[in-house]
Image 1 (cartoon, rainbow, N blue to C red):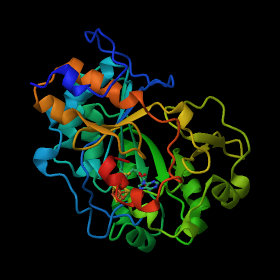
Image 2 (tube, protein in one colour; image 1 turned 90 degrees about the horizontal axis):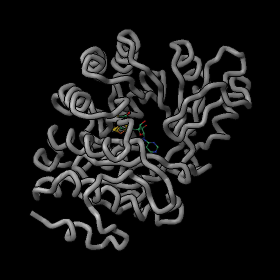
Image 3 (tube, rainbow, N blue to C red; image 1 turned 180 degrees about the vertical axis):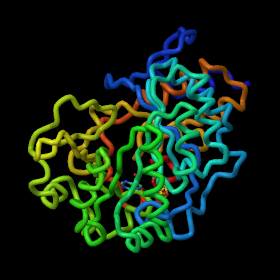
Length: 351
Ligand code: SAM
Ligand code: SF4
């Protein structure tokens, strides 16, 4: 087994006493309460801003993935270190074989308060009920258009009907549902209002995510990028200038209320136009078990290797602290060469 000091040899600030699981705090005082756990880097779609047409050429082999036991153990240590909420993501989490069993295992074994998932929903109509029964609280569904042909183009072959069926199935079984949209000029900018109306008609909140220059997203012409002000302009008088009352927030979305007083709301995730890094509370684990402090950071520590080398829960916990301790104050997406980002897409890191 690797000694603790070998695992942390680079970490200059380590305390003498390793015998307690620490709270996850970084050197800038940010505390981490939200884990995004990628369960696969594969997907049944290939959205043009995320996945190359023929899929990533660097997919993890099955033996490289965290097993369900390993994933549940990692989450349990995170929970002891202050993580309260876990989001399963990917790639597409629903293509991971037996995903319901993983959700159930994490639910049963850990002290996490809320389990949620981000999904493209193509398999959700069959899986919504078992996922809810396994302990899942809610899903964020990615849906960039309500036009079937356009959907097939953006996702390179996806069937919009399956996604819509998945959304309805999730609502029917009582999962909390939000919709994620990446606004792109020349792609879906002309139907953003329609998508908002659709989301509100279902009683859900739409959330617009600014395109990040990662992976395939870095290859799209900058003229396609729309920031929050661009989206607000398209939404016009649907949306008021005010934040809605009583909005809970676990993540970076900022919300605006519907202008008609209906109580509906719309969220904006603004990594490009209004960096929210100073309040970041999230940490990511890739499908291979690498902990990453930030989407934009190359810095990674393999929790899988620590487990497979016989490390104990304290080894894992202090590796988590070490990987977060030096986290930068911002993401610097725009400072780095674009081809740096092109190499690492959202589906490989976990979106
Ligand atoms: N397959 C699932 C899905 O599509 O919801 C989960 C993984 S996906 C990588 C998570 C989210 O990342 C999706 O809402 C997707 O639209 C978003 N996304 C992917 N690439 C992006 C990029 N370059 N910029 C902004 N958002 C992106
Ligand atoms: Fe797949 Fe989600 Fe990426 Fe689309 S955004 S290719 S559904 S992982």
